[in-house]
Image (tube, rainbow, N blue to C red; front, side, top):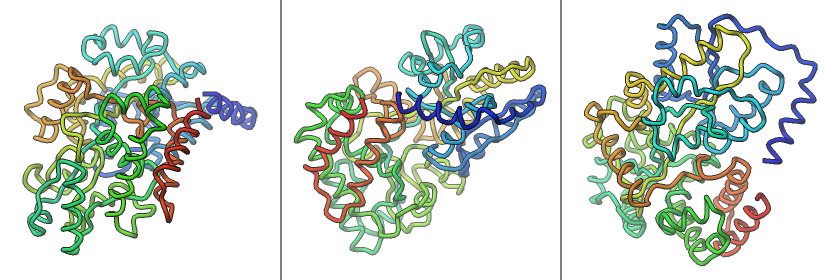
Length: 419
């Protein structure tokens, strides 16, 4: 938090003399990083719905699957007095922006639309600051998915793995047949996504929460965490040598084309399969990441609403917040994005089998304790602590001689120093 404030303060000094841009009446400017196929279509659907209401949509897309570049741009815009109407911000970062006074109160919309009755408390709490809505959730993503090309698996004579041990056996056979076992992009957030899945498999939901939500040093600096890093190193050994810098959707394309057999990635990857005209359960398979059956690592896309001054822009902003949670958009958006609706009253009959399975696990895991917030996607901790974890994971991946014991000590030190 201190680092976040210092960054914004420094930007404010440099931006103090910058003129603010005039905003057209009824305009809603939306910052997001949905630049890939399924994600781009989802954003386009929201744009169309806003324009049908007579508002002007100004698209402010900043490419980059993890949103790091978008946040850098947002900080500059905000401190210069020219924020967008809405920005894609996740997790505890929402509260940081609210605490700094940038966000507006959405309770008038929330009360009129009964958001508290439609949104699960574990998610609505993240959207609030001091009990007031300042952001609106768009969807729920399951992060711990394994995406599979069934033809490749059939050709290699293997089945979809359900445990890490099975994954290693299957990967060896795939490699022997000339396939890349695991499609992956060597970017920090993608490395952390795979680490996230391995950590859940090895630690289980309770110790996962202790490590990445509560920052319990007894779990972080333990034999269990050493085993997490050891298993993670083994999983990453099945990634091809050209993975460095590869975008996540490019890796998904490798599975689609049959160059690779599997990918560990959130269900936004499903949008790429949909864009390619493929049918789930036939042309591609979705399964829990090895060792995580019945568990659900969640990521929630959300839009934080920034304080505006013009009445027409404020109206457009409130209409945007309302539209995001209407059933029509929840269905259209999530079918394109690959996620599931954040509303609990939605009929899933129009959704594909992967989404139906996701909703079923989401509800069941919420009851039995298997539901955990994804640290790799900013739902479990602040962006600063998340960044410290990313650094440790990335250095481990890039090491010529990865040492699980040494890295566990480094992880504990990094988190402790960031708290």
